[in-house]
Amino acid sequence: MMKLLTTTLTIILFSFGANALTVERLYKNCKPYQNNGLSFDGLNTKQKTGALLCATYIRAMIDMGGQNCVFLNEIYKDTSDKIAIQVLSSFHANNKKAPLDAVITSFVIFAENNTSNWKYSPSSYVKEFIGKNHSCKLGK
Amino acid sequence: MKLLITTLTMIFISFSTSAVTVGDLYKYCKPYQNNGFEFNNLGTVQIQNALGCMFYLRGMIDRGRGNCIVLEEMNKMNVIDTNKLKVFSNLTANDKAPLNPIITSFINYAENNTHQWKYSPLSYAQDFISKKFPCKIKE
Image 1 (cartoon, chains in turn purple, yellow):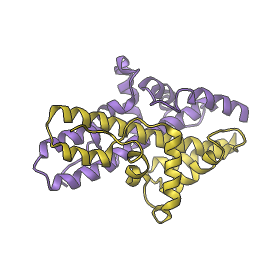
Image 2: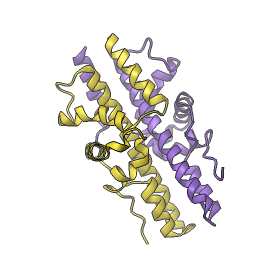
Image 3: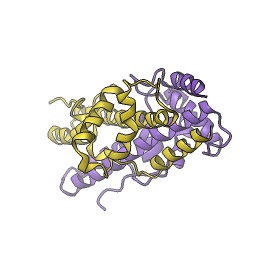
Image 4: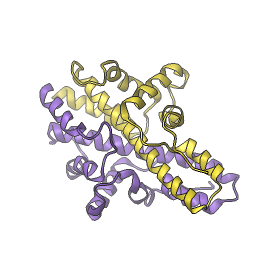
């Protein structure tokens, strides 16, 4: 059991430690989990570990965007560059309450519709799969 | 197998509800760092916790790097004052950063700021990520 887990981890983490994840790698970790109704039941060990990677990584992206929304709202109150902050917000920030399962599904759909972007980092497309549906509301 | 599922479920609950605190993340990360960033000799629960630590911090680093790229582009387009961009950069962005030094940086930060353990690590990303690997906005 432990050996299987360690082997699985080695495979999953092979390119994970030093470099950013790619859209492709994240997709391959998220897809079995999403296909399984965002449930662990019935997934094998490799798929479960992949699901943990998928959910935790995307959770961090949502949380960072939510925190950025708080920062940008503070700046927005006192700036004359409101349009610039709005543009920045669309890339940098999102609603901190974006539900994880919905964002995982958005990411999977984005990846399937944009295979030409698979070699790049998912962080380059957070606007598409998080911010678009769960935008940061400024001035509230 | 039952232990693995129980552990994964516990980690999922804490991550899926946005309830990750500095204290939680510290407890996930510390055994892995203490073990020289190796999985050998860690128990199943510690391995799962280590993964939670790694994936969460990697997500934070990557999103911060993505933010840096946006800020660099906005700086080139000159659509917003550079000094303001630098403030945004300090708060929300970072350069590319290797994972293990960031895990260590986070652990050092957590150990030196135990009064912040009940808050989100995101509130302190500038201290343990951006300060070490800043997003450089050129004048």
